Amino acid sequence: MHPHPKPSLYPKPSLWRLLRRLHHDQRGAVSFETILIIAAIALPILIFLLKVGWPRIKALWTKGMTDIEGAQNNAVQ
Image 1: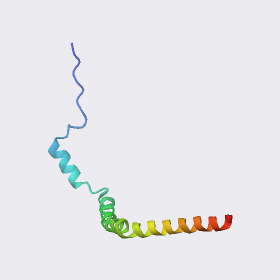
Image 2 (image 1 turned 90 degrees about the vertical axis):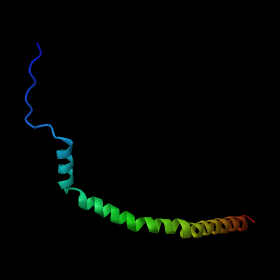
Image 3 (image 1 turned 90 degrees about the horizontal axis):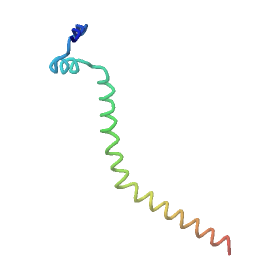
Image 4 (image 1 turned 135 degrees about the horizontal axis):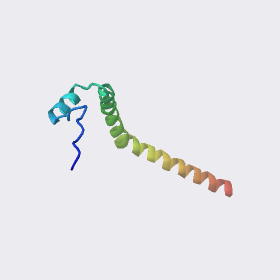
């Protein structure tokens, strides 16, 4: 014979009850909103830097490396 299952102290939550509880739970809402605001500010800045700033950074890097190579060649001679 199978033993009778123990009665649960907590009733099984229905999907509707679970969704309602999640909807009313405000913990973490401020953190999530803050992350969205930071992302909304950072994303356009990042896109701008990649589109406009990266070619300039690459050009400066290339010029600097060329200058260093030229200075090295002049020092050797």
